[in-house]
Length: 74
Image (cartoon, rainbow, N blue to C red; front, side, top):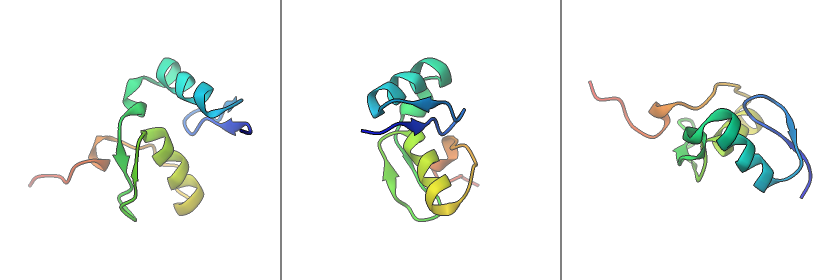
């Protein structure tokens, strides 16, 4: 697999397994939880995948947050 940037800090990571390790160590375990896109509804195994999806497909640099998985209760 080819190199890819970290969706949080933009550091270039050599492969997907190293990206997962980098995300866990540098950005905390919360980025390794399941998340869904609030625009198109696609579900991702990891929040970092949602970040990459948001940037590449929806051109958003917003970091995912807990509300991506749940509807707000009013």
